[in-house]
Length: 252
Image (cartoon, rainbow, N blue to C red; front, side):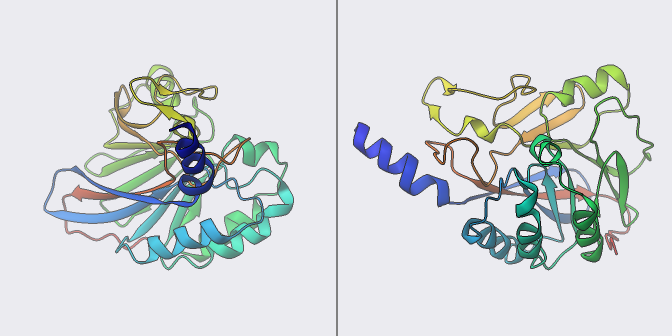
């Protein structure tokens, strides 16, 4: 059994993308979004290219990214070149490794805008007149929001789902998306993640109820420190957002 676990953790799971779909909200209209995170691109494009192909084939109208595209600034151009293959507006935020890399975010902002989306650093982006996306790079940054729309919050750190509500009281969001944890990369049945990073807040993988609204923590695409995953496959998550109004979701 230990040998099987080693083969799985090193040779199978790191490249075996899982796809999950959930419906969120209420309303007569539905808009599908794809969520991916924590690519940690290091120069080998196979996994990210596979993720782009799957997202393009998913029927999603928008793609959402919640940080850590790279670890080193030199890898940013190649990562962005692969992401340019997405055939939908791409919205996203930086993660701690993006910041630590010292990369100039200008090229990322330009690419995201060319897709019809936005690189969000404490900004709000309206998708048509019924969905509003808030992308936070600082937890205490107040963001103007509108009533009567589906409100989606993008954060890198799951723990911010607690901090935002405490520091900036607002109505709960309809959906909060985060990454950062990688789900621990190695999970043990009955225990969960062996190790999680700072600012996890106890939210290591999957669904949680938080003061800021329902939170989904995605285990990410790439790996950090060690290229290993066990009972924690890389994931792309699709959300069918149910909303009201006339159903207009043209973000361009």
